[in-house]
Length: 273
Image (cartoon, rainbow, N blue to C red; front, side):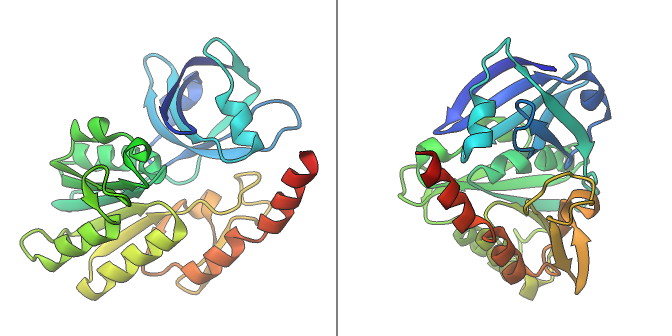
């Protein structure tokens, strides 16, 4: 059992939860994740470790309640317990000093981006972060990122905060300006967004890393559910990733696989009503 230390809402249907997990907190590295199961027999949910405090023995998870499994997790109050938190899993981020880096986060993908941006800043990089959401309430971690980023640029689809439009609009302006062009770009968010970012950076030869979150069950490569094609080769996001060269990822195939069980999920939800 893993005790929930705190549970706060930071955006509509998005919670920041601090959980006691001493061994994970000590071993965790940026880019890694855990698989959480609320109760015996529940769905196994992969979640990026947004932050960790080795001294306190806690990890921070930012969770969007989009289904029954995640809804059950975020309903656990401070003082409550979660049945299983397994990890850390996946490969850690390969951090190096590129000089200038742009980190791009779409929606709740900003939560996954946060530990990457923090590690890059700690490595001596000049980090500029572009984050976006549908509207102001959906933009998360802006102040937290500002603590170590040179700039935090915000976009919203309705223009309620920052620049009206998408994160790719602002990234395009930076790439077009040679004086601002980064040596590397890290992108986390919906599959179409990451694909668009990779297409933007490719003509400039800018190294682009994306963090993938395909369908995942066991987190050890046994189920094969998280397989992706990278550079023409089959990879498993849970053990070979979750981060890959964005210019090598077959995003079309990934998008198709992400929708494999969409119809089945809808039928299950309707049957439960």
